[in-house]
Image (tube, rainbow, N blue to C red; front, side, top):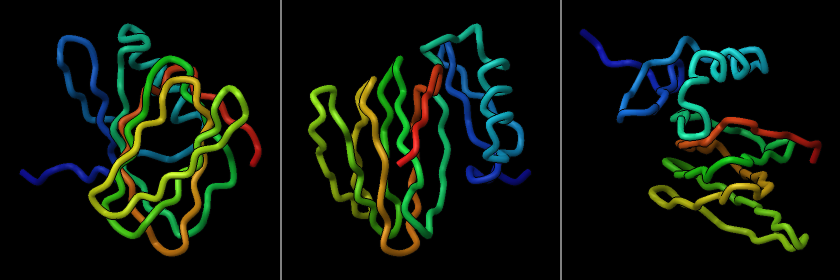
Length: 132
């Protein structure tokens, strides 16, 4: 038996210390809506574990209102921008093996200068997006 590909099949961490393999990741809003539907019993305590590679900077800001998100750089580099409630923006440079935490309610986006790979552990319930 082979292991699962984290890029293709994210993991859901749920109540009672459960871990479930998710269906093939498409990145579409429908995938995320279905994810929330599949795990609604876990509510805001569920976490999505996913890994993504980026060749260009993000085109949007996002925010997770119900919990923190852990962002771990595994290759390349990432400049994470975090906008606080008072409008100030903190900038965090992440190199391989380094991480940052996006607290609940913090808008965030990222810039990359070359290929980068990032592991996310996200409290995804109620995630919001806005244009950059």
